[in-house]
Amino acid sequence: MINSFLINSPILASFIITMITVATYQLSARLQQKWQSIWLNPMLITITILVPLLLLVDIDYQEYSKTTQLLNLLLEPAIVALGFPLYQQLRQIKFHWREIMSILALGIAAVISVSFIMAMILIKAPEIAIALSLKSVTTPIGITLTEQLSGDSSITAFAIMVAGLFGGLLGPAWLEFIGVKSAKAQGLAIGSASHVIGTAIMVRVSAEHGAYSSVSLILSALLTALISPWLIPLLQQLFS
Amino acid sequence: MKNVLYTLFAISISLLLGKLANHLLAGLPASLYGMVIYAIFLQLNWFSAKKVSTTNQWLVRHMGVCFVPAGVGIINHFQLIQNHGIALIFIIFSSTFILLTVIGFLSERFLIRSIPADESLSDQAKL
Image (tube, rainbow over all chains, first blue to last red; front, top):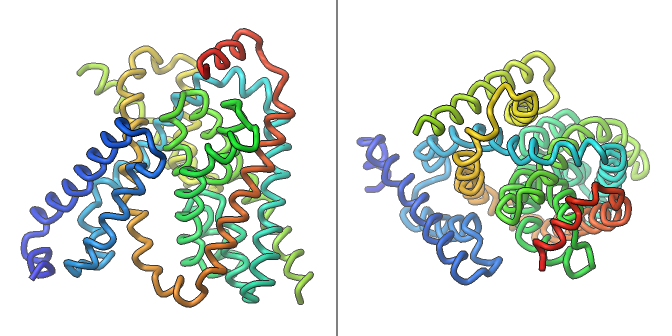
């Protein structure tokens, strides 16, 4: 019944489903403002409400994705808007750029190696190991790189989402816990581990967090594209 | 209202140039090129930071909603989780936290060289 409604009146259905998405998001944003709990993150809440809802009324993901095209359309301009906090901190970031590049390069080489080795030991499938080692970048880059290195890109897409959400949600508390308290360090760490999703959470903390997270997101994407094509084949030799 | 349109215009131009950069250079996705171009234009004062500030802040605060459709995409991967189970989640989790820890620690340790006025300000904001 619902599927025939989607097919017969796509514009109305699209409007309603987009409204449900936005309204759930707004409501959870209000709740989070009131109770300040990380688990009330509006992205997380909206996703956990929508997934069972879609399964219940039997709308598949293709349909949902088609009907929420408006939100997808806004994704790119929203990412461009992160250029503003970046501009505000440009002087500081330029001042530190050498340290930032070296730290990120080191972190990325470490995370690629650790994920690859863990996956080879626990799951023993190279295409999954490749996919998992490329999860700390923004989705289009992660998928392209995985396909270039003949990994399984549907796993990359899933891993990127999970790394984004959980790094963004639990990351700040974890960093506080291990004594990493400066906005710069927190921003760089979250931007690198949880890319745009982490950055979307960081900009709500402070402009400085957002700026460092944005710069880390961009540089991590670049560095991963540079490092992975030679590091991953090297790791593969280790297990062949 | 004028400033809202101005901001949207500035962002659209940056995104369009980002698409061009992505087409010519490949490498980064168009939106990330767009972000860098937008920051550079603000720095050069080709776009007025004062005019975009309010609308931009609103956009950035609410950008999370745009990620919801992609996040709901997890629905497509239930089979994947069933096949590889806990191992997959465990690897994603632990390597993400290793990365957070490495970069967090190193940045906290090595980014201390800073412009003093800004540092004291951000410390005060935390208290």
